[in-house]
Image (cartoon, rainbow, N blue to C red; front, side, top):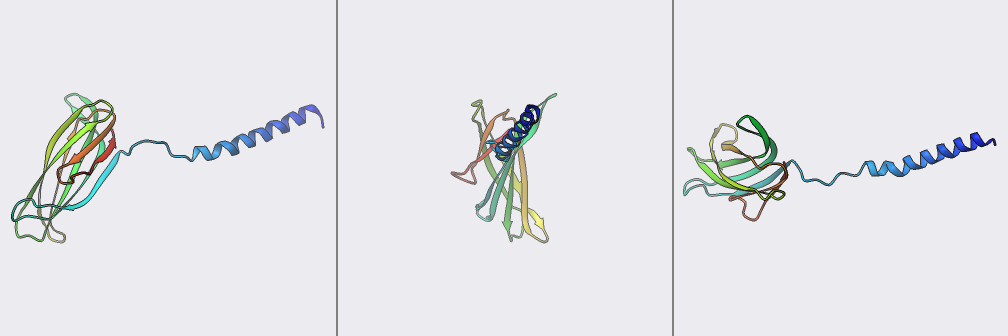
Length: 152
């Protein structure tokens, strides 16, 4: 076999081998925190006459601060007062900590249940926090010991 053909064959075999060895690495997921997290429903007592359950979610979102846009986290609560003959409100304290910058903050989120003819008395509320870029841990007073970890 002439030298040019042999070199070309070796080059092709080497290319096929390199592609076969590299292809599985392309399918590996990258290691990063999620841009969305949630907490399952837990029982709550909003007042002596109002109970129910609350669940929560958080997601990375842009935050408008004056004339600039920064990185932030939106935290939402979903309050289900169950079967009740009126309106109930639930206030949940949200605290956040940016693990990369050390910044912290807090705020209250209040959901007022209103009648939804099909599902009972439900309420929804959210708040947006200017957390800056990084990994943010959010904790809620309604979910002791639980946290949501978000990458903003």
